[in-house]
Amino acid sequence: MERYFFLAVLLMGGFGCGKSSDISENSQAQKLSNIEKSGICIMTFNTKWLLASAEQAQRLKGKGIWGLEDKDEDTEIEQQHVAVSEVIANYVPDLLCLQEVINRDAADRLIRTLKQEGLDYELGFMESRESYLEQDVAFLIKKKSGVFSEIKVRHPKDPINPSKCLILTCKMNGVDTAFVGLHLKSVPTKESSVELREKQADAVVAELIALDQSGYETFVLGDFNDWDPVVPDADGSPEATPVSNVMRKIKDYKTGGDRELMNIMRFINPVSQRFTFDYHGSETALDHILIPTTFGGKITEAVIPKEVGEDASDHLPVLIRLGTGLETEVYLSPDPISEVSIVDRRQVGNNHNELVAPSSGLLRIVSLVPNPEGKDSGREQLTIQNTSDRDVSLRGWSLVDAAKHRLNLAGTLPAKSKKVIVLKAEEMPLNNDGDTIKLLNQGAEVQQVRYGAGQAGSGVRLLVR
Image 1 (tube, rainbow, N blue to C red):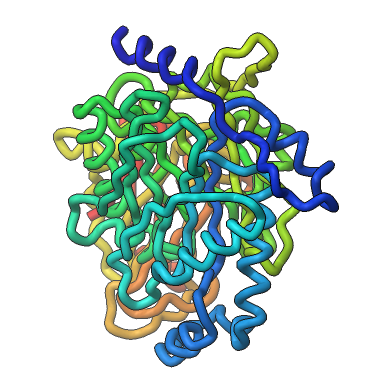
Image 2 (tube, rainbow, N blue to C red):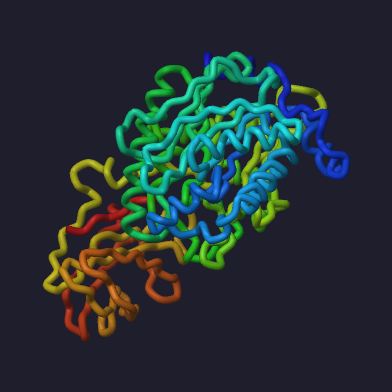
């Protein structure tokens, strides 16, 4: 009950997103409908290598880092700062979380560019622990908005994970509030990236628990490089479905009972508008804002602005407004989803989700997800591993289930690596009431994995040893 009282106090406080007096006349009409709205405006935006200088770009290129080809001249870097500033000026968020800011000099340069637009922001910044890419997370807080006070920033307490993460604590209209800004490991479907993102998620969960125990209402926002398993986005294909537990861990950071956080994508309609990035030709949502579920009834706007040119970034920002209790405000309703309790593979007792199935070959099945959270069709997963010290051609290898469905494998699996296979329903579905999967090499059985109905719980990854 005490938390709900704090929430009411918070939302009855001052207004945000006020109109800037110096916005240029030629864009005034476009911006007025956004910036004159009441509410507390919060945005996240991956700015794709926002640099301070061409010299900085050359130094990074010297490390062999790619993606900086269009940043050879200072005029190109200035063009990006102006483009990013224009995106921000369209909405004038009270709090903005940026990813891929390259060091404080770049953040300071953006602050100066915003000032030329008539926007005055305070910088919350600490250099990340990512020393190779040098990509930082930064917070920009609108000055004189009357919303935020007692602002402090710090790194996560975990000495390593996530390497690109910044935690801002403050009073938001007088209430203890925290924002965890993050940029998780890239490449959503790469097995090594999945494993690292799950470790990063574990560290974030530890922070969320500590912040909750200290009385903070906590938001998590940034580039997750991952999909939400229960909130559909613009691409519903099997190639754009999660192969990790990152989102469910963070949203349900206190295991058991209802989730603590919800994804604001649920407020964005139609579903075709839910995309922030073009991942290998797939318009999909990898950037997210997770809010406390207690704020779910206070969202007046949730949007992914599309008026972002290539000069600014290859990502799109995500924005929300929290209502302040005015009679003129209209609150949005989230899309309903099937929220079920999650059984994490590391949380299941008595090794209930571990299967024993030795392999006699170079390849082996190491995990199964027969009953993914939400719909099963086209989202079930099976992971194979090359246990040898050499690359293995998958030609001649196949998978067969108890109903004699066969899936022929292709390509090459590098030494000591894993491959996540998303199973299409028409090819080889994994049955929730139990199944047997055989791994064959040239028709000869190498491994047989069997599981029962009691093991295929919703969202459970079955580990094979």
